[in-house]
Length: 508
Image (tube, rainbow, N blue to C red):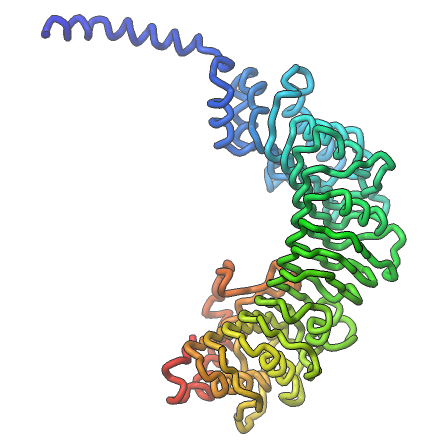
């Protein structure tokens, strides 16, 4: 045994040298494709670009990464963004992308490369058409499942002459495009060619600041038979007319999620029998959802009412939604335009169990009549169980001393949980809280928080919600003092901190 060990020790340096020679002679291409693909999939595209500096072989194999995401941060450092002329920066970005993709263009592996995601997010206009066309052709030839092309110009470089790139939709409707399941387009132009046959297996379509005629949009949607999710923001019609209407009487049978924001249309009229979730705003004058008997969640954001007082936003929600179906409702509203007294003749939200209101407060109401709009909404929701009211008072709010009394309304027989943030001394806020505390007969918990948790923005993706566990950075003690949050907390304790509410009320 001792002799064997000694011989083994003596031979170990030779064996080690032999192992090193074997490793140095190992070629990268000998790795099974699946193993290499797994290794590279664990790295970001930026890490792979750094890795390709090591050898030409790695540079050739780096293209195996399943997610190719090319953005400003992929190639450039953040501290050099504003120090480089835009034209040269565009040229450098194009060169870097081409350097990554060129190995596939020049080898037979083009037809065997399989991508999951291909993304380009960079400010490029129509003058770079040839390059972008080539990238799109590569993404489809590589059978990418998710394609995103966002060419929005930076505000600092935006000019009226910035021509939008026209997406070659014919390249997205060929046999290779049967793999495309998600398409995200930003700041481009879409024109349907006569030979367009639809995107066969497309399930998710996102259009942001896309120029397209209403007729082409209608044809595009009808050609995507498997479409499940549709997100349209800031639709730009070439005719620039708000009198146009998007009407699709044929069934969009697979559509489950629909978002329509800042679309300057007179009306949308859709037949979506399996629609589950709907997000919209008041840019459209009329919304018609035909046969949407499965709609359970709706989100409404008021934009134009910040600029022009048209009519009550709560009435808009009541009129445009199939209220009898909605179970969860999110509202983004403004105080001076959204809280007038709503009509009490509307159909009730008989299935509504959760209500979230993000309320931007500006101005100073002369009385508490604005609260009745909310009281009416609560009364129209007889089976409501959860209520979130998040307020954002713009500026310092101070009220005159007054006698505090709850507003009048009917009992709330199913409301169990209430969460109020941004509580302040604005006329009507404490009165609304007292109404809930006194009329919710089965209330288990009510939280009143003087800290403003909702954002200043007006988009539905910025809605604050406790149930969604949104990220929130608490204000510093200095900010709390500056915006009167400490005084608001004492105000809440003074007017709501009664012994009769001690078991259910928490003042943060």
